[in-house]
Image (cartoon, rainbow, N blue to C red; front, side):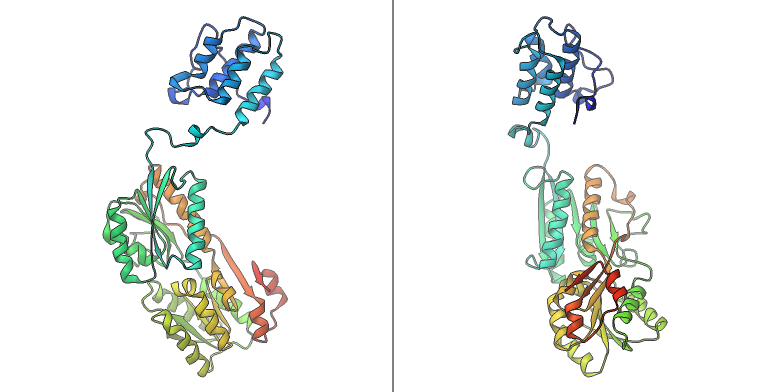
Length: 412
């Protein structure tokens, strides 16, 4: 910052302690007063010292003088002699504005309200993925000014069990938060059932219209909005990349939980993509995490060439999926990059961390007065291709150089 960056206030303190025209009372800060002193000194260099007027200018509206204010007052009262030049005075002003805020300035202003932000997580608190997305969400909110313990209180509840989510939704509502973030479609549905007044933001939903969360993507209506993970031809692109990585691919198993809200859409889109590529695809239902290992054993015995994992399972059960895929030497892909390090061959899909960053943006808008009904549901804009080269070697696959070059991340 340099002197020319400072807006020069076109009035001076001496004989007229008025604020500049056009500034509201709350806009007139001690920095304005300091700059008025700069202008006054430039016009009356070497003139009479007016400490009371300087002090009044720095104590406008009852603010007590802080250390940086005292620096300004010290210079403006001419304690260094009437011969001090304007350049040195401006340097003092710049120095004072660079000083860190005092403890009192860092605290929440008197009378301001700490907002309560609820979060309902479809996953255990110790789940690494939940921790990752939780860090992304709270860090982004903090960057927007909602700091835990200072300007915001975070009310977070966790459960991987769908039935327990309903109980936790009611528990959150009883805490009367100002807004609630739902990490999944199921969490959002339970919250919507529990309240019609508290604003809700869903971070991920496979199809918020068909699940009844919103009236339409453009006009959500009601007290809920957020981010959809519907993307045209995402399944086709993922399957095409998978076939490129596994040239012998002919028969594919689609592992999916029939209870997932996006189940029908996933089955339809992957079936169409398989037919377009001349591949045979068969559904294998995985009703619980405990059924993952058994499902991989079954498709290995039946001679499938590869597997696609969809739904919340692809995000939350990376360790089980990876271990089972590796033990059966089954090339496996999904839409969740976070599961690839555990033993999947690859993934192509949405950058879910980005969705939680954008969910924080919705929260900010709502807390600043926006209505959920007026905030359109947004769709993903960032996608990632991740390849696990270590798994490829274990499966005896030579990954095409062009495919590796196109990857956003390659795990060695």
